Amino acid sequence: MNWYLRKVEGRWELLDDNEKQEMRSLCFLPPQTRVPSSFSTFEEFINWLNAEEKKQIRKKALNLLARQNYSTYLLHLKLAAKGFCDKAIRETVEWVQQLGYVEDREYLRAAIRQEYARGHGPKAILWKLRAKGFSEEEIEQEMGQSMPMAAQQEMVLKLMAKLRLSRAPSDRQKTVMALLRRGFNIETIQAVFKTQLRPEIEETE
Image (cartoon, rainbow, N blue to C red; front, side, top):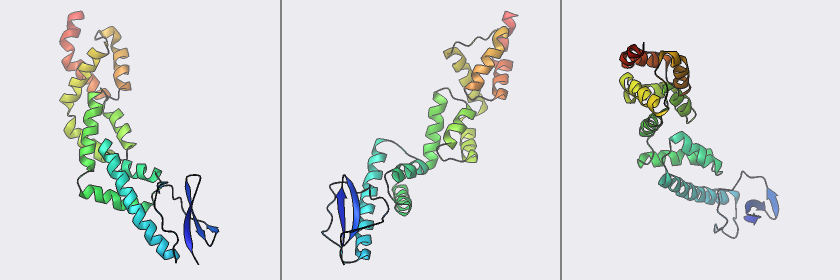
């Protein structure tokens, strides 16, 4: 009994003496993969496949990380989309972590700084980073260090200037709504109006 792989329209199929066998997707194998002419046993084929998958997934992970940073969650999703099995993905993610190429804490810290620089408030940042696999507790803990109240108030003032939001009492509701849409907490916004903007408000009254 011989087992072998056959490439059909860019896809790989596993056959047993010319009879097609059901097998998980082998799309992770590049079209130019050098495959042995045949395998004497299915176990021999599996051993070859596992070794080839390990080589291909490590190569893919390093290529991805060379272009941009990923969290472990996002890297897992990216590799899964390429057809690699879950076991190979877990092992590869652990491998790049050990090499220091993936560090969730640093990724989270950098992502918060980036969103903060874009003028997004805590609620918007929380929503966005939860979608990237981080827990609410992790995000809030890091934001507490990266975005203390004073920094949030400063960002509100900068954002008001950038968006040309009126500071006049008559336009206060409109300004507050614009800042809420950006993800800032009402407590932070009220604190800005109460302290930072109070002298200017009093001048207009």
